Length: 296
Image 1: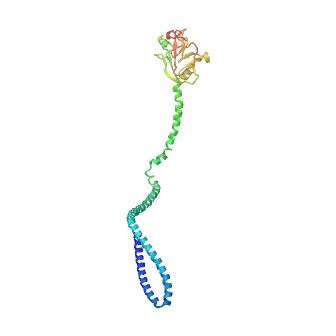
Image 2: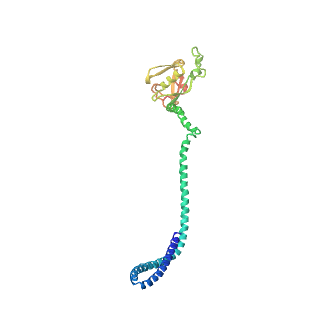
């Protein structure tokens, strides 16, 4: 549109200049007639007019070149008009784009405003903190921290409990042979149990290096059962249990022990127990023959 306006203004200017030149030529003719009558004036005017003609001819040349340039411009304008239309369409699209960009800027501002909204939302977080009662539950976790002390005793229990489980033996005490021989019916032996079982099978914890004698001492003291012995170490000998001594059932009577069904040929103070061993103390009236003892 600006180029068209410029072309119109240029054309109008050319027309005005051409009209001005026509009027000047008329005036020049009149002036030449006057110069014929007045030679002196003519000489002066001829000089002036010559100068003016030179300037006017230069102007005419300029106007003609301008006309040619304008015609060329018109042709260009015709070609440019189409391009201008395209440019205008592109400009319109650009303006649309700029217009779209402007709302995008507005959108950016809106998004900035929206981005500022989460900031007060951060301030609003303490408000839902009333709803975030589970969060104080995180603060309540130190309360189970008291339970955290509970695992400690549990750990202590796991430390102590497996040891006894791995380090236990079973022990039993019986005087069935004496009962079978009717010893409990004699005076002074009525305290003996009628079934002959003084101690049923019972598990006993032990420490590394304990002997059969150590296990017997632990269980009799725990259950309050009478037990008497002599000697020490490997020479330890059991004289009586539950007030039943050697020779009470005859000259070949006394106490014998077995481990896992085998009767060792050495004293109770020399046999070191192992985990899961089964120990039995039995009273014999015939040097173990009535027990089916197999010495080893």
